[in-house]
Image: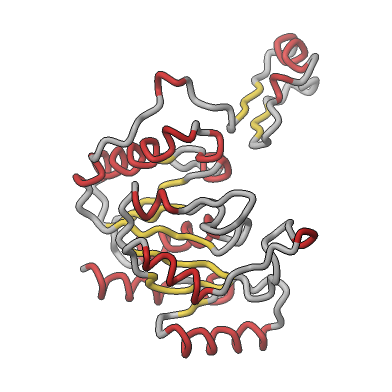
Length: 252
C-alpha cells in the first residue's frame, strides 16, 4: 500500500476489515479488492429453470477432494477444445478463476446458500446467451463427500450437467487437511456411482499424480482404465486432448 500498489485478495479474511488498512489505502490512493466479499443481496439470483434454455453440452469438472486440480483441468479442457475447433467456455466457481480472468461465473463459497443454485444457473445461461458456445465446462468446487465442504450436487442438479470429468488423487489416503480426524478418501468407483445416482455419467477420470512416481502414476492409470472402463488421463503430464475426442463422440 505504501508503495502505491493496490491489492486483490482471495482470502477469507477481508482486507478492508483489518484495522488501519482502509485509511492507509485511502491515503495512498490504492484499492483493496476482496474477491470473496459476498455480492449485495439485491444482485443475487434464485434458480429459475432458465438452465433449460442452454442447448450445448455442459460438462462439470468435479473432484473427489478439495485442492485436487479441478480448475486447472477445466482450463486445460477449455483450451484443448478450442484448439480442436470447438467454441468452448469455462464457468469459474472460485476466487482463483476470477483472478485468472474468467468472464462467466461466481465465487461459490462466498454466496449465500439460498442463491448458490441460482448464481450457478445465471452464470451458465449468461455465458450461453452471450457466446453461443459449442461446449461449456463448469469448474467444480470442494467435493461431494468432503466433510468440511460437501459440494457438487448443484452442478449435477441445478446446473444440469450432461456429463462429469472426475479428478482423483491416488496418493491421498485422507481428505486434504483432515488426516488428524481420520476422514478417509473415497474410491473413484464409489464417487462415480454416487454421481450416477444423480443421473449423470462420468465420462473420464483425470489423475492428480502428486506424491506418485512416474511408474506409480502409469500403474494407477492402467488399473483404473481396466476397472472403470472409461478413459483415464494425466492432465499435467499428457494434456487432455484425447478427452475432447471422447466428448465429440458423445455429444456431437
